[in-house]
Image (cartoon, rainbow, N blue to C red; front, side):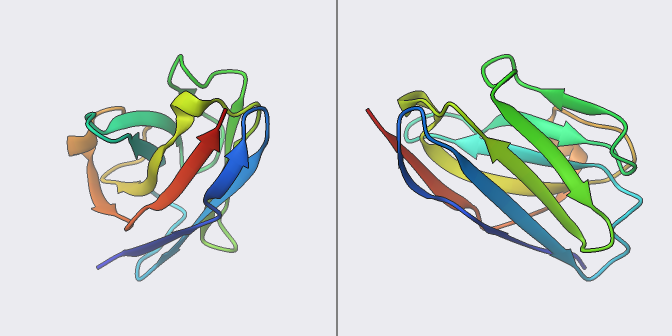
Length: 124
């Protein structure tokens, strides 16, 4: 069993920054890819970013490229999402997810465990 706990969400003005954290416990962390997803009210959950176990490969949704940065610290069992230049359309519940394998996956079905999510609200 794997547990994921996100933190770092909040209310920020457009143009501001937030850093989300996701602490993983319950299983060896360093072997599997991790991802961040978000779900805005009335919309489907969507892929935001992913990172391989070694951190050498990252992937981003087009909507966040150049603004968001994903990273991980395997010693701390933690994955981060640095979000800069935030826009109102970034408002959503952000969840981290633990992939079933080593490679970055966009499809939600490729992730076995999910956190509860943290709310990010960007005001205009």
